[in-house]
Structure formats: structure tokens, C-alpha cells
Image (cartoon, rainbow over all chains, first blue to last red):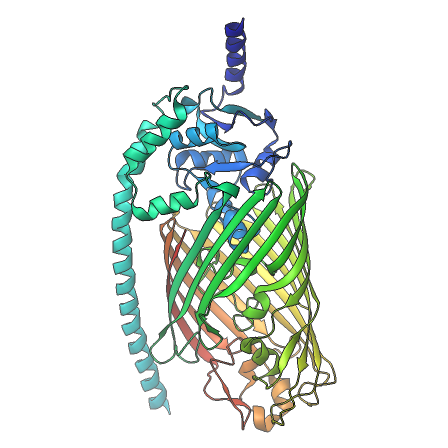
Length: 138
Length: 477
């Protein structure tokens, strides 16, 4: 029964990500299962700082030059990586916000998302496992 | 006369060529070192991306294994270990620490900018900052920055508290946020003011001086205030970010006094309640940004009992600039323009015919194009114009008011600056750049770096047409 349910959920999830090679992922403790693209952009712009239940959002990114970071910026968020960088710099150096936390590899991203409460980031599909939740972006 | 000009010109050229040569040599050496450093990094990142897609981390013992792998395979240096610790999430309250340090070398044909730049150049501009931010509660952020700026006579390099902010998010619902900030805040005006000391966030070494005056920067930079802010979604087009603050401006410094009252006076400028506000609309793709900022600055002069020829009466003045900003961003181009109108009103209590009832409206604007040849190489081109009095653009009316003492000084009432520059992002954390300005006018020169003769009230040694060349290296984390 449990196995069947898992398989069923798995195939449903697979359908959602049929067209892309990467996903937006969150820590399993995050209640949100879907998010609007505007909310997602607001999160990666470091403006939206809390999930709907009031807990902290913690944003993880790869370096500006990383291929996945560039693809997520352009395709999912519809902004250029240099624009995100200048948005974050403005927040950090004016004292009005914080920068996302930089990780150095997909493994580190997976580990951080899996273990950090409220974490959100992105991963190649090949790197995703059941320790993180895949977020559906509408 | 002609001979004189020629010889002067040629000596200027030979000296700038010499300095250019030295500058390029310095750039080359620094560049070579950082490229070396970068090459050391490269194999690491290649191996990461190569192994990333194939590896499937086992679910049950994931955290331990992943961190261990990260530690053993990367062998980071001391600096990166420290930085990693600084920016890791494992510390309480999501503490983040960031900072920057920049050094510029500036040489001018005439006139002094940030030190004695016209006698062979100077390393007079050094900027460094260190900030920390903390989120003890999901809705609460505390942050503070200490800044040191060594720039000519106006800034000694003495570290000062740049901002210290208590920021509480009152309302947060998806794309709509409202909150309050209390403390010493950066003044939100124009696109660049809040981060003007951070070389990485500026389009050039010298910001367009018509709007971002460096001579009154201490006044413009930050103030003790209470500020309400909000981000609201505008239909499906974008986000409107607004800030409104009640402030006590920081006027107790030499630069501000000399700019507002001609020279340093024996008495002091008082801090009076002032207002500041800004709205920036940004489309969802951040391609188009449109802003309007306004300041209503009040200050008054507090004379001493000293009987000095420089002493004034207890006058008050109002400065109420409005700035319109527009920017278009594409993958390679960023086009930016800002326009400011700057009314000054002095009241009748200064006991000085020069200041009593003085009213004039300044005007400033610039057009700027930045182009990213590659992510590492960028260039910019800008035209920047300042008019101290928009109804007297060449200063001739001002000269006519007092022809004897002001003859030939019309150029102190405007400045038109054409600038071109190049930037090399050697690594994400290290940047080098160079730029050249040709300026007609001395309207934004600092009075402290280019003093006036107190007997004649004339600048001692300034020239209408001049050139500026600068290089800068900057590091941030």
C-alpha cells in the first residue's frame, strides 16, 4: 500500500517535471508545494523572507558563472544573473537585506536544502532525491 | 603665448603617458597574480560540474557524507574556509558578514580631485567597509556597517558608523511586503546613493558628480531616521518599491559646511527634521526600472560669539531636490539616465548680502551606456552635466552681479563631463578598472581640495578645461 502510494506520487511528480532538466527544491519541512513565478522571483530577489507559516526562508544559490544558476535565472526567473547580483549587492551594502547563501556544488546544494529548515534552491533532476521537496512553479 | 601653451600641453602629455605606462604596469601585475589565483581554482570547479550530474547521493546517510565529501575533495585555503564559515547557515540568527576594499589612483591635468592629483597623480581615494547582518526572528533584521573613506581633504579615512538598522517586517504576503526601519539609514535617492562607496555597485570609479556630489556626500549618504517601506505588485507588470523617511541629516562636517556656506565657518550647522522618499518601479524581468526620489532637507547655521569676518548670522536654509531615474537592462546593454532639479532657499537671517534671501535652482542630468562585451569585460560611456543655477547656465549672470571679483569664474557655476571607461571582472570578488574624463567647468570640484583665497574670494588655482584619468582595484566578499 505504502509502496503503491510512493510509486503513484513519484509518477505524478515525474509528469510535472517532464519538460525540464532541473527543479526548484525546498527542505521537506516547507509546507508550500506550489508557488507562483512572481513569488519565486520575490524570494530569489530576497524580498520575500518568510514562508506562509511565518518561518524563515533561506535561499541557496550556486556561483554566478554556474551553468545551472544561469539557466534558472534566465528561464525560471526571467532575469539575467547580473541583475540578481546587483539586486543582492544593493540589499547587502545598504543594510536593507541579506544575500542568498552560496554553495560550491550540487552535492552541497542538496545537502544544505535537505538539512536547513526553510531552505530553497535548485538542482539538476539527476541530483534530486527524496530528502528534498520539488516545488511546482505556476 | 602659443609656445607656452604648446610646452605646457606637451609636458602634460608626456607626464600622463608616463603615468599611463605605470598604471598599465600595475594593472598587469595585479591581473597576472589574480589570473594565477583563478587558474588554481579552475580544476576544482570543472571536476565538480563533471561529477555533479552522475552522482546520486544515498538518501539515508546524506548529510554526513555530503559534507565530508565537500571537505576532503576541495581542500580550501584559509581565506575561503573563513569566508565559508562566515556565510554558512550553521551559525545562530543567520549572521552574514560582508565587506569591500578599493584603492584608486587618480591623475588630473589641472584641479585637485581626492588629493593632489594634478601634480603627478595621487593614491588619495581609498574605500573600505565591513558589515554584519543578523535575523534573530523571521521578521526582524539587524544590520550595521562601518565605513572608512580616505578622499582628499573632505574624508580622512577615519572609520565611521555608516548604517545601523533595526528592520521589522510588519506585513508580508507573497509579493507584497511592508515594514519599518529605525536607526542610521542610508538615504534612498537615485539609483546609486545607498551603495555609492562600494566600487562593485558603481558603474564607474567616479559616480556622475552632477547628482552624486562627492563634496556633499557626508550629508547625502546616511541620516538618523525612521523609515516606512513597502514592495507592492503592480498588476502583473512588476513591483513598486517605496520608502519614506523622517530624518535628522548629518551636517556636522567640514565638506557640507563649505559647500552650503562657501567656506568653513566658525559656527556649526544644526540638524533639523528633514524628509526623504523614493519610489522605484521595476518590471518583473528587471529590464525597466523607473524611479523618483525627493528630499526636503532643513538645516540652520549656529554662529559663535567670535567676531570673525567669516561669521554669519543664525540663518536657515532649505534644499529640496527631486530626482527622476530611468534604466533599461538587456543581456549586454544597460542604459541609465537620471535628471535632478535642485532648489535652494536661504532665509534672511544670515546677516550677509551674499546669502540673505538667496534662491537658485540647480539642474543636473546624465546619460550613460554600459556594455558587457563578455561577463568579464565591461565598458561605459557617459555624458554628465551640472548647472548650479539653471537660469544661468554659463555663469555669466552670476559674474555680472560682481564683475570685478568674479571675472573669469563663470566656470565654477557648471561642469560638463564626458567619461569613458573599462572594467575587468577578474574574479567575482576582484575587479580592476580604468576611466578617462574630459571636463568643461569646475562646478562640482571640492572647495576643500581646491581652496579659495579668503582675501579675493577667488579659487587659488582652478582651470575650466581639464582631464582626469583614474584606475581602481577593488575586492569584496
